[in-house]
Image 1 (cartoon, helix red, strand yellow):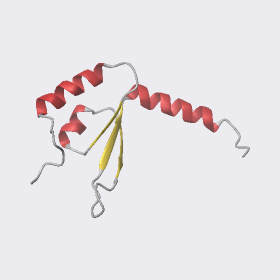
Image 2 (cartoon, one colour):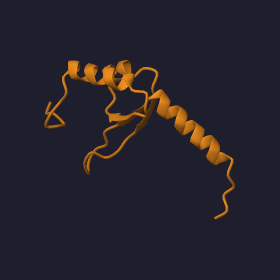
Image 3 (cartoon, one colour):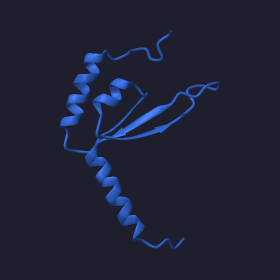
Length: 88
């Protein structure tokens, strides 16, 4: 099978990136494609999926992982927005 990208990360590079991202206290959003490795490395993160078109003929699912700090902030923001009245 042909590679989808010019440069692919090795498993060790994925693990190194995950260790760094998991150590951050700030907000992190990671985009990629579903895999058992990604699901393992980002266990505990909020995960969302969508199916964007990669070309005119076929869809390839994309997954978004949101770290706990970012997920909490988004939830709090949504809660605050829900308190507002829509006037327009």
